[in-house]
Length: 203
Length: 203
DNA sequence: ACGTCAACTTGCCAATGACAAGTTCTACAC
DNA sequence: GTGTAGAACTTGTCATTGGCAAGTTGACGT
Image (tube, rainbow over all chains, first blue to last red; front, side, top):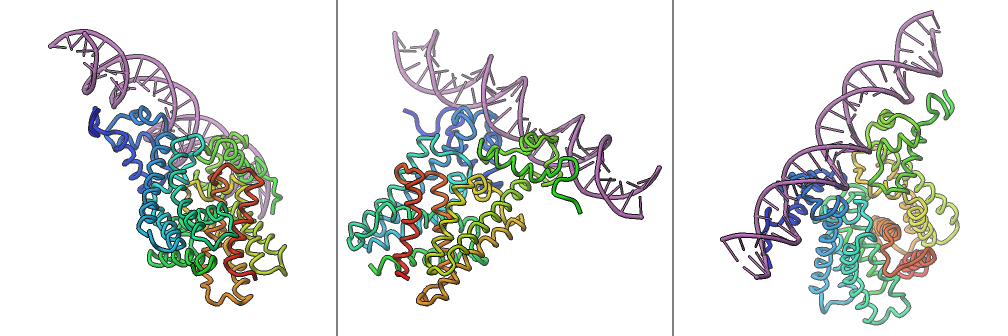
């Protein structure tokens, strides 16, 4: 057993991942380097490889942490809306997804735009699945609430996942039609998820 | 005036962009390099910079071409469904978006996952807008068909853009719940866009 | 023929990713 | 307390890369 601040540096892996977050924020995901992360953590140029294997390994570790945070954020939104209509809860989970992308953009960028291929990193894939599980739970909730028997639940899951991920991507890229500030992003979030409300019925 | 095959190489810019497509397909968007593109085009290591300025410039040129193809694909789908109900046309345009992502993945990857920031490349931004214009036209069509007066057209645009982009991203990443082959991707496409059909009314 | 200018080439440098071969510290056995 | 195994790092090196400066080549108008 050892406390979280041990060994030479203390907790190098965490320090390196924190450095990655800073680098992405400052210079973009394309400019992350093992050496720059090492420099910011105050260690030698090849220390990162010792912990993460290679550059993609470091990004994968960062992405994994991102999926865990995303899962926790969505789970919190799900929990906070217990008792509400299932469609509202689904909207809350979707909103948490978009908020995660906007509030933790470095994570979002590494998770989806860094070119790491998920299939080759099992633990990333697993943590991604654990985030998806929250959304699936919310969809199952909706289905079991009844009244949607004609809807395929797998389609509904992909539908919400797509909507949330697409909206998050557009928001992060600032690709909305006409310029929009933080306030109107909120408006789009409620507008887009509200659209679904209108579609599936008033609950 | 000069024909498209002139000067020393013939048409280096196009040859380089073709090389980029191959590199992305073979090694992923993270492994594109000016020098490898030059090698495949059979020119010296710094020839690409002469045409594109720098690496990001080359990727931006490639992305611009991608947005033009995307716009043309969506416009073709829009044109081919003239006379159909507006909601069907919108589904056709969205389907064209997802098909573009699946059939021309190298373009999709560079356009959305290469870390180039659109705002700093005006012509990329413009060609992106011209693609979005097709979708906006389809939404306007739907609005003017009547019966949706309570819907905000900007929200509806962002809604479809999000849905199409999100579904395309999931499909390319193979992040669907449970494994799915090409056939079931088709099923998800019709399922997800059909969901909207159910929501907005039967036309 | 001549000049001009675009289309390249050659040569260079700092930075990077990856690897090999060390060195230092920790924990645990005895 | 001493030794020893192994984890946590360092140092050194190499091929590759992006970018720049300074050439060279060839097409075109006059």
